[in-house]
Length: 68
Length: 515
Image 1: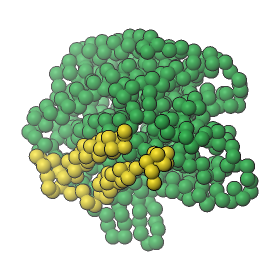
Image 2: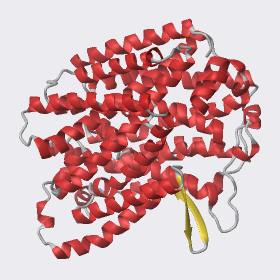
Image 3: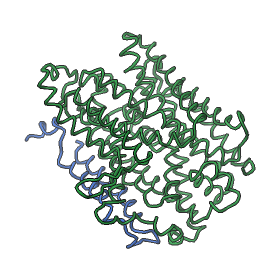
């Protein structure tokens, strides 16, 4: 597919990075635990806070990769 | 109630005075003709990346959120943290869908979701369903913002009986109504900048200073009841708290941008690129929300519920008093004034945008569609201004007349209702494959089933779904959205077979959805 047709359909493979965010936070059994704790903060809490930052970075990557 | 906290009250009133002036002065900001609905109701669609960041942040992360999320952590523990994955997942949706909606709305002069659905599917009854859902879901949300103001005013020690008790709220409300009427969306946009700066100052100060006072995060988390520190491990044949947590986050994320006030703030951006940039920048607010959720645990560790000076506050406002009590307990009076002003002003910004959004919906999709089909531009803008007043009076009467509990329950139902507009609005931004009557029936089934399920579980968010011998507790909005989608998909070929004229009517073209 040539780039113009791709742009018209509004799809970019970079969008798959968004799937990572859904996978990272929508499986609570993975992160609902106290250990490893960090500076007294249980894993459950710092893991999800970390994902806020990671998701912002991923979104920024998608933005720069898809904007010409 | 404790004595009036004069220092905090003075700072609070001074900051309120400042934003009142700002709200009126905003009419002259990026001046436009306020007799046009898109100038009054969308700020002329001229807000760049930075203003949009403040406006959308001030709009979505409401005062009530900042009081209720820590209150939930205070009372129920880990489950309150669903707000974090929830506000992570909204941004891929914002990034992918809303630039498309912005472009098509810009091209065709659409101001509301009802306008878009009307143009896309050419079915006024589907548009009416979208419109009514939006208005009905927004009303209790506005009422809850006023609860946020009530709590901080109460915490400042201002009290009385009868009419005097409600006076501060009436004053705040009159201010809100007046600047919204005169300046439209420019008022909350300018005030949001002040509000957000105050919220950031409060959140970061609280998260640094209070743990130092309490002896570190280790001690704070040790004070949280053990059973509430993490999600409960599900029993056999059940997905338990895990599925409830995940569907609550996902369902809330899918619902958020369907609220009229979200769309109003997004459509006021100056370009689709400004929206995409904001999808990467807005998580700054999610981070603050996560920090604020922790304040609920700080309040447990500080033991504010056992302190005699806060007994009246907890009695009156329940766990919503946890954050105000913690701030009063931990900070000097002047800083309490700043923090409370952040919450109070934080209530006015979304309340103003919500009332504008509801007014836009009424004006465009009910009044213009069914009552006065050919208004002049000036009549249309004037109608919206009046409608915004009526919406706010309705919210005020509600909050003064009925117990807060009902506003909270109605807001929960509002989430279940608004998500039923997803197939027409979000999927509609991508495809016109659906038949509009199939969408309408899917919507109706979702509304009916969602309401019945919520009532069956005493208006709590999670519904225990039994399936194949397993128990899947999950967010009612999410389950009913699935029902709605299945019906829309199954019924579309059926309705298409009955009529052939459907597909030709779309007034939008594929190219309208891109830059």
